[in-house]
Amino acid sequence: MPSAKTPSTAPSPASKPGTKAGAAVEGISLPWQLAGFAALFLALAGALIFSGASAARQVSDPGALVRWGLPVAKAIHNVSLATVIGGLIFAVVILPKHLSRSRGDDAPEHPAFARALAVAAAAGAAWTLSAVAVLVLTYSDVAGQSLSGDAQFTASLVYFMTDIQTGQAWLAVTIIAAIVTTALFGVRSLAGLALTLVLALGGLIPSALIGHSASSNDHEGAINSLGLHLVGVSTWVGGIIMLAVLSNLLRGSKATGTKDITEQTLRRFSALAGFAFVLVFASGVVNASIRVTSFSALVGTPMGRSSWRKRLPQLSSAASVSCTASG
Image 1: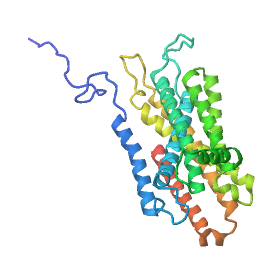
Image 2: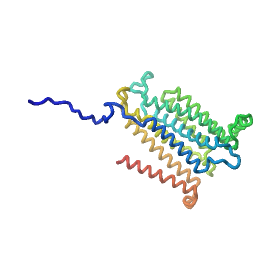
Image 3: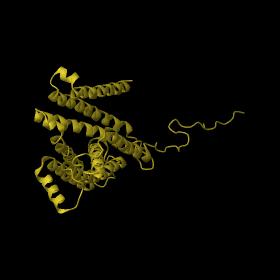
Image 4: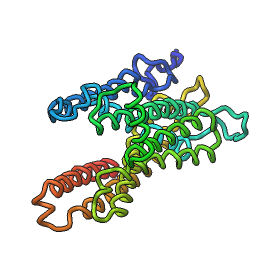
């Protein structure tokens, strides 16, 4: 007598040992994200120690708090700004805003969209606070004075913010950061977020105006190339950060009714990352050509050697990514 067929007990190809069927695949966990953030500051601390930048100065030393605090504040500022830009780019052009095709105001937001804006808002607050810290610490560093709350220090700080170009630039960054952060907590329309993104990118302009390239012979060309360089770097770094913090939401979940948008997200970000790479590479070449004007200077001066040493890793990285994608 033929026996009845029994259902196969082999695991589904989509399921993994130790996981429930249909469960969303975990992304990059929070401990790993925090570990990456901590690695940045460990590398910064090592660079300050081995380069001697954290050592006390013989003349006009502002104190250990300023010597250590200013580089840390700048690092937080740069990472926060990139995160804000990345979050806004993902919200505006990469991620779906709603769970369903319904686009009314009552339609629920996609969890990835909501998290991108929440992370961008938190980063905006860090951007604003770090910009204030950089402003105050930069004055203390330039003046060679330790931090103080007395009337003379305050009056000199106000003069630095209103009459000195570096102080004016960081004051502008602080104001832009505060406006962008306020918008991130209240704006939800794509048009409003696009305008907020433009304003956030405008926060890079003061940094370009006071960068070391501003002192070159071709003043406008150097500033423009540095500004485009900052846009490309911030776009790429901010996008990588967003991929990390959204990684566990892109695969979707039956519990929340979300579908897998990993391929869509990576495809759109890859196109954006390619554009950012071209922008970084081309602007770097233009910026270097303004200051290195001959082949002998390219190979015989520290500035020239630094220029092509930066370009070679960029080209090798692009070639590696291209081969991986084509393979």
